[in-house]
Image (cartoon, rainbow, N blue to C red; front, side, top):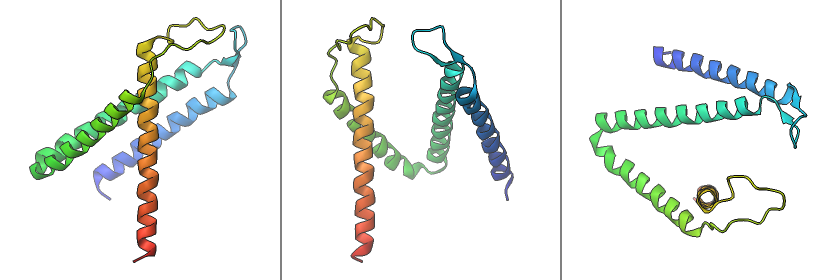
Length: 148
């Protein structure tokens, strides 16, 4: 086992252990009863940990992709094509998203504005499109194996 594989497995176990601690705090911890809707006290910490993991993943993915392009310049075309396809999917999702404010009884929060609704709709439609593409690719792969 190489040093990188050894250290990356240690980091993986460490991040998993920290996640388990946050999960235990969230699911087994105290509940804030003083608010309008009772919720676990550790909700913010749990969500922040998820955001931290997301950004760590994005940074590592970006760094490895840059390293791969530097080491293999010919693969840059494939990488740029992939980014272009993702950009097209996001633009289609943006075009499908609606920014009409919702009429929610009893809600006067700051998130019911056109910009937030457009962003949320874009993210949802992007996930729907990517999920659909994933299902089609899985079905194609499995069906092509049956007919070979």
